[in-house]
Every structure is written in C-alpha cells, then in structure tokens.
Length: 110
Length: 114
Image 1 (cartoon, each protein chain N blue to C red):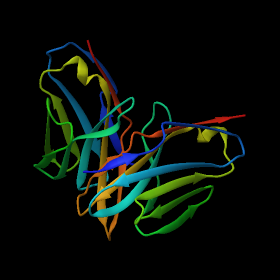
Image 2: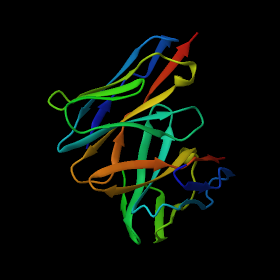
Image 3: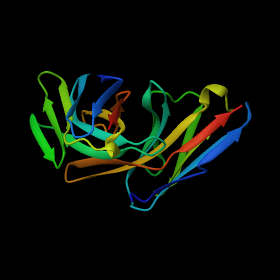
C-alpha cells in the first residue's frame, strides 16, 4: 500500500504563489495525480506525472521526483477561485486504482 | 461533464436499514469505483470494478457490497446502515487507453445515518 502525506492547510494572498508538497512511499510507482476539489463538489483532474520533471499547464505546474518519492503542485498568480482542497493520488503497479492523500485545503485571501 | 451521475444526491436513513446508491456513466468506461470521503481521511476506496460482474474490495469494504450488471451502472449497497457510514460517497469511472489513465468523478451522495 501507499503512505501519502500532504499538509492539511495552507493560506496565501491573491496574486501570490503557493506550493503544495506531497510525499509518498510505495512499491511499483506508476504515476502521480493532482485533483482539485471545491467545497461541496466532486474532485476534478488537474495534472499527471509519471516521469521526473515539471509539467506546466497554465497557472498550475506539477513536479515529480521518483527517487525522492516527492511531488509538488505549484499554483501561480493565485485567484480567489483557487480556494479549494488539492488532493495528491498515487497509482501503484498495473492496478487501475488510486490511493489518495487526505488533501490540502488552500485558502486564498484578498 | 464526465457523464457520471449519482442517485440519490442526498439521503437520510435510520440505523439498521439497507441503502443502495447508484452510479451511472455514459462514456463506456471500463473501470468504476466507490469512495467515501470523511474529514481528515480524504478519499478512501470502498470497492471497485474492472468490468461487468468483476469487482474487488478496497481498503474500507466492510459493511458494503457492490454489483455491476452492465457497463454503465455500478451499485453500492450498505447492507445494514450504521452511524459510522454517515459520509459523502463519490463514484468514479476510468478508462485506460493508450497508457493514459484518469478517474472522473460523479457529483457525490451525502448520506446521513441516524
């Protein structure tokens, strides 16, 4: 199984940058996903990393280091609508299922 | 819109009663999942399906059963509801095409067991 850790809460100012870290321990790593979940809504897919490095998608970027069991999600030019929970999830081996961290609640303040 | 619906969206039931939640998808996804989400625990997998009539247990399967008689429907049954099963339940679906894999989530069902 996996042990996935991410901070519980983070607060940042509108227009700033926030970095959400995720560490994991797993055998047979086969991909890391980030999801965004607004309060009362379903999670929605943000990014996917399977190889080391940075994946950029607009204001959001995700980084992976497989040797360190570490990923981060970088949110730039924060907007009020970015206030949400961000979930880190890991896929192991050839299983078609994910294990999720407990999520990081990001609050963006004016 | 990932084409995943859940019913009911809200339900209040009494301890000891059976409850069935339905997940319906229109995108012909092979894999389907039931999660529960509780504060401090994130999403925890209850059961999943990798095809019609093919299901397996997740990490929190006790007290739950599932059925998948056709590709588009995945049912979750609480055999005898308990207060500890008060939660928000999410269904998800996924395909694995050309190595890509992504889960799409339904809107959730808020279940309260009194």
